Amino acid sequence: MKKEEVLELIKNGENSRVEFKDERIKPGDLAKEIVAFANSEGGTILIGVDDQSNIVGFERKDMEEWVINICRNNCQPSLVPLFETVSFDEKTVAVVTVPKREGIVHRTPDGHYYIRVGSTVRDASPEELARLFQFGGYVHHDVSPVYNTSLSDLDQERLKTYFSQRLGLDWERVMESPEDLLRNIRAMVEMEGKSYLTVAGLLVFGHHPERHLPQAGITAVKFRGREMDYEVKDKMEISGPLVNRFSPQGEVASEGVIEEAIRFVRNNTPTSSKMEGPRRVELPCYPPDSIREAIVNAVAHRNYAITGSRIRLLIFSDRIEIRSPGSLPNTVTLENIKRTAHYTRNPELYKLLAQHGYAEDIGLGIPQKIIRKMIEHTGREPGLEENGEEFVLTLFAGEKDG
Image (cartoon, rainbow, N blue to C red):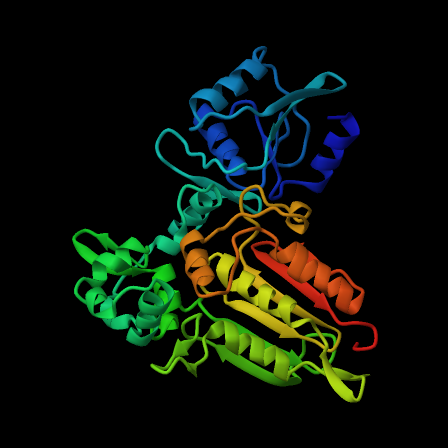
């Protein structure tokens, strides 16, 4: 790192990516800082800069070896930072750059998982720790138990449709041992001798998933113009199971969250028309396949470990924004997701949605059904953005529709 770059870091002060330390810091305290950066977005520790942003330097002769040994012995799993030194007249500053997390969750030898929050270090809360392990691919939250749930929380008609029509099983045989079959499809799990529904099972088959998972469902809003304001034309809290409920005759008895969200978009976006031969044909403002895929992706891939935040479906006069809680998982980036990058944060939930005809496990949904179809329909590529712990997909209307 160049001298000018270090001076700029010092000028801007400590923040979520920069920490100042005196060389007298204890190994355990330095390990705590390193682990916190490693479990967050990475960062830089400047050893030889005090809390008042003064360059005081260091005198330790074996500084690099000392830092590397701390990373090896006091961080579990061990990690390898980038170590550099930068001299300022007669004072030298050690620059320790901790890389951004790559799926591994780090802890200190006493079992603490630290994270960086602003310019401070703190223990990860149970929710934050669950998200760290989920990000690393160690666990999938969709098969976590939802405590205080049981078979009575399931919609029998949805189960019957799934087992008899989707899987071709005899319903009477299913009811002889429903818990065994529900565990087989990961809709139920046994914990300490008791059976509970999983997040995936409750979301697909539950009567009222939102009673146990308040973060489930979609908040849909239609605004009058191009910005958020209090002047809304329509608003709907869409809750319930994700898939439709069918009658014994095979007709839709009640819509699931996915279909209700699609209908909300259809009811709150304009159409145009054109003549095809002697007939006038109505054209939707947004391609239906793109809308369906975007909504399915949101409910299938959102991070259900993030509580207190629902998916938001926001319709403006010139665009639709679908804001889904959870940053992109693992190796997925904003660039490779445009091609064929495919990672399922909730594999069991995704599988159940696929069996209900809502998803295909081939990684072409965004490239083909969203990007390509939106370009063909409106001439504009959709926007993909990570905004903290939120993934934002923006579908722009065509110029004539804005």
